[in-house]
Length: 79
Image (cartoon, rainbow, N blue to C red; front, top):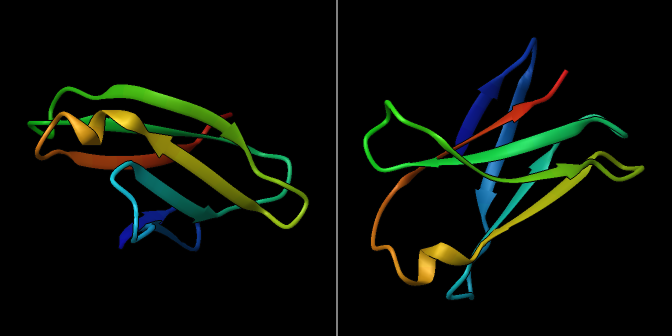
């Protein structure tokens, strides 16, 4: 799990059982979240921006995980 601190803890979870990177985040309903990927923790590339649904659930997919062996991920709530 990756923890995002925005006043309270948010959990970003890699969904098992897939060759693609499938991430789930419990956020705030209607807010937009961005998943970014890095191979060195200093340069971050946006992967996807997704709005949270009515329950606050956000689901991301990173199809590059199939071709790239390792990396770091972060998610942030956009203004």
